[in-house]
Image (tube, rainbow, N blue to C red; front, side):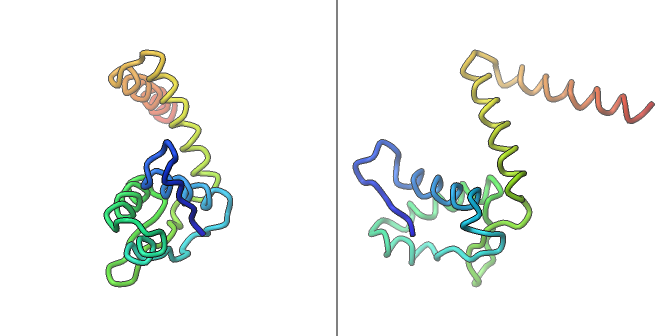
Length: 124
């Protein structure tokens, strides 16, 4: 199911993470689908389990998957595909702004102002 290019420019963990994200967005992996265990995926791909663990940790941090102790790793049901696409679009926009020279504080200020405007409208 997963293909790794050992000569590719992206690290192995990034390739795993990227493929899982793409499978989720495409609907190939659906909410609550079980993913291979860290050990099984590492054996299948012939790589170090720590590499798979790093990919899974990043996916979990970004809300794509969740782990249940002694049960396994699953695709998150909290984010629907449309939500994931919106989050990715927002991240891409923020990345573009960062590359254009906006500082983290400037971006936080923009978000803070946006939510203040919303709060003001809701409180009227």
